[in-house]
Every structure is written in C-alpha cells, then in structure tokens.
Length: 142
Image 1 (tube, rainbow, N blue to C red):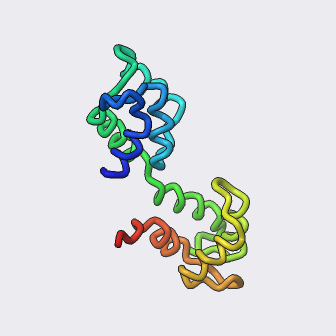
Image 2 (image 1 turned 180 degrees about the horizontal axis):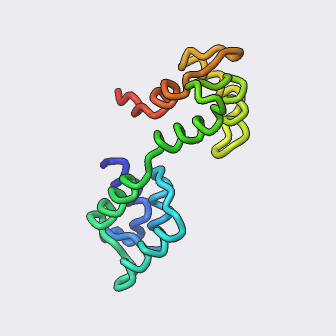
C-alpha cells in the first residue's frame, strides 16, 4: 500500500490527491502491472468526467488489474510449452536461452545468480514447477 501511495503521489502534480487519467497506465506499469490496450481504453472511459481519479479509485483499479494478472501461471505455461515430452523438467541451457532472449531479457550474470539461488547446475535439468514456485515467491521484507 505504501508503494502504491508513493508512486501515486509522484504523479499527483497538483497535490490534490488525484492524478490525471493520462498518467494512470504509466503509474500502473511502474507498479509492475501490464494493462492491455483494451483495459487501457476501459480505464480511460471510466475517468472521462473529470479526467482525474483519486487514490481510492486507483486502488480499486490496481486491485482489479492484479487479480487479472497471474505471473506464476504465465511462467508455468511458457515452460510447459518448452517441455515437449511432458516430463516436468527442461534443460538448464534451454532455460538460460529463454531467460536471456525472450521478454525482459536477463544478462548471463543475472541468470548465473538465479541458478545459484535455485541450486541449478548449468548442465543439469530444471524442474520447472519448483523453479516457478521459487521465482514467484514474494521478496523477503526485512
């Protein structure tokens, strides 16, 4: 909630507790969501009256958006498609290639760190369900 409030406040240029509708998608993306074009249009039409929205409305929209997105399922589906024999694992080299080439590309060093944390040997196999579980755990908050 604090992270949402902080990001919202950065775009509350007049400091009236409201942001412009045109900034909403940017704020949502800064907070890690990925609204589609259709969602973008729907959001804009719901803000048409004043062209602004307050924090409460923003929270409602963020909640809806986060309910629609499920990164764990998306990652698992992508890795399952790679597993042609449906054995429950893929080669670490294949996972490395996907992580460094597709989507938000990781560097080889980042993949090395991820593999180390997940106890994956670079020449071994990866149980993708366990891997997905590990990478989608919420970060530790000290």
